[in-house]
Length: 148
Image (cartoon, rainbow, N blue to C red; front, side, top):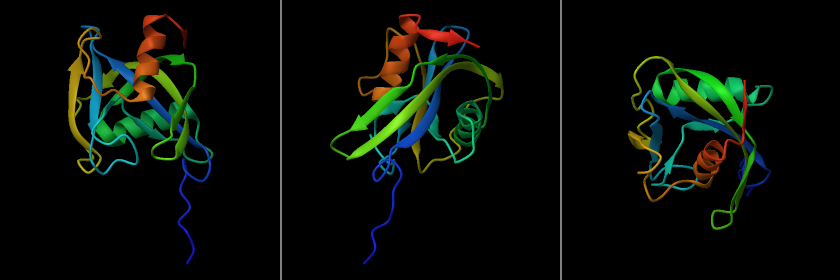
């Protein structure tokens, strides 16, 4: 029987996402559902996989529109993050951005992937944050990003 080929498990996957800020400097996070590819029930910045022939910035805007029903303005790029999940035997190369909402009100558009969304101040974040979200927040706080 042939095994199913999975990106992130049988080859390195390329992911993208954005830390979205509001006017109060709070960030929008999503609680991943039990059905998530990895880090189920952890909080993360919105994002997903980059498709073949798709630029990371375009993929980020697409993924966030699909997940939250909003359009975003991306204003900075953060250095990539090696997202290695030993327990889940996955490896993703994540390309994170910093953004703000351009249009719309965030709502859960994919309830099979997301249980909850919320705005959090950077000094009152949930305990279970994904590695990519922690990395993006740390880069933001350390001012290690490139303004676009």
